[in-house]
Image (tube, rainbow, N blue to C red):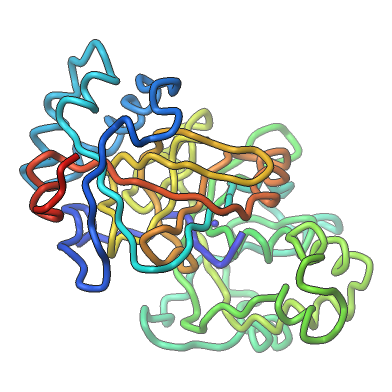
Length: 346
C-alpha cells in the first residue's frame, strides 16, 4: 500500500460522489494540448478501467458520463468531448510513489516452516479505539489460541510488510492460494521503520528502502524483531474469496484495481473514480491516463499519488524504486470543471 498507505478495502463513501471545492486548493482548467504525451497514450485501456468503477459514482454528472462510456468506439474522443482537464494545486510539490500487492508463501495449518500468523480482527477491537500495541500483541501472545488465524506464513518480515500494504495473496504449497484484504487495525498510528533506522544511525536517509529494511531485519533477527515493534500499528485481515485470481486487489471503491492504470489519491481533492492524467518525472518517465481508485494514509495533498504496479516480487521491486516529482491533472465533467474554476478558459 510502501508505504504507510493501506491499499485494500478502505471504503470512503463520501468520496464516491466527488469532493466539493476544497478551500485550501486552487483550480485551473487547462486544455488537452497542455497534457504532455496525451496523444500517444492508450486511451481505450484507460476507458476500460474507468468503466470498472464509474457505475459506483452516484453524482449525476459522473453517472451520465458512465452511461455514455458503455458504447464508446473512440476512447480519446470520449474523454476530449465530455471532460476538461483541471489542475488542482495546494502549493505542495508533486510526488509519485509506487505500491504493489505482495504474494506470500503460506499454509492453512501451522508447521515448522509456516509459523507466523495472519489474524482476523478480534471481536472486541472497535474502530476508532486503541487496542494493544504491536509489541504487546506479539510479546504477550494476546491472540494465541483464539482461532483467529487465516493462514500461517514462512517469514515474519513478509507479514509485517503485508500489514503495511494492507492486502495481498498467499500461495499454498499445493499451488492453491487465497487473497486477503484489510480487515481492521488496533487503532495506533503507523510509525516509519525507515525513519527509525535513520534516527538510530543504522542507515542514512538516502539508503533506506523497503528491500534494505527487509534485508537488515533478516540479517539481525532479534534486533530486527525489536525494530519492527517500534511501529505500534497492527493490521488484521479478512479473506477476499470473491475476487478472481486474474484480477487485481480491491481498492477503496471495493472494486479490483489495475496494474499501471490505477492510482491512490487524496479523496479530499480528487473524486474516487475520476480519470487522472499523470506526468511523472524521474528515471522512468510516465505519461499516462490513470483512474483514481484507491486511497492511502500517506497519500495527502492535491499533487500526491501512489501508482499500483501489480502483484508479486517484480512489481514490488519496481514500485519500491519510485519516488519521483511530476504533476497530475484531473479530468472532470465539463460542467463540474467550470464550476470549480469559473475563470478557466481551457
